[in-house]
Amino acid sequence: MVGGGGEAKAEITEGNVKVNNEVTVQKRKKIRHGDIVELNARVIKIALNPDQKSAEFINTVISANKNAKKKKKAKSKAPVNSSESAKKPSGERTKRKPTSV
Image 1 (cartoon, rainbow, N blue to C red):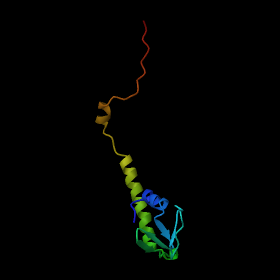
Image 2 (image 1 turned 60 degrees about the horizontal axis):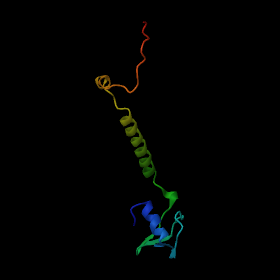
Image 3 (image 1 turned 60 degrees about the vertical axis):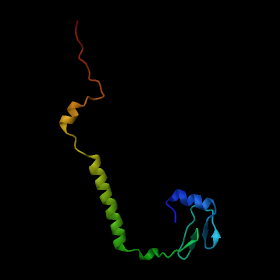
Image 4 (image 1 turned 180 degrees about the vertical axis):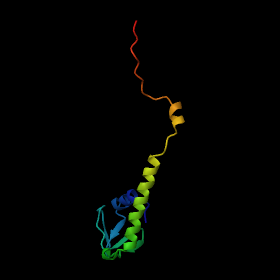
């Protein structure tokens, strides 16, 4: 229907969205089982039963989130070669020893 939340908000603000055959301007409207949503002559009837969520689906979502976190941690802990760090000058100044005159 729309590409994202920004587009959806614009359509709602312009009055192009109907919920149960009534124009709605409420951007965070709660949609329930049996509601009919209409936008640009496209009609969708909501059929949701949250009590019958598949355990397999829930486990898939949880494992996907865990795998994404592991990959993110692995990327952030990339090894640094000691030869590379020796070639690059550090941004910090080293302390000088006092010299006697």
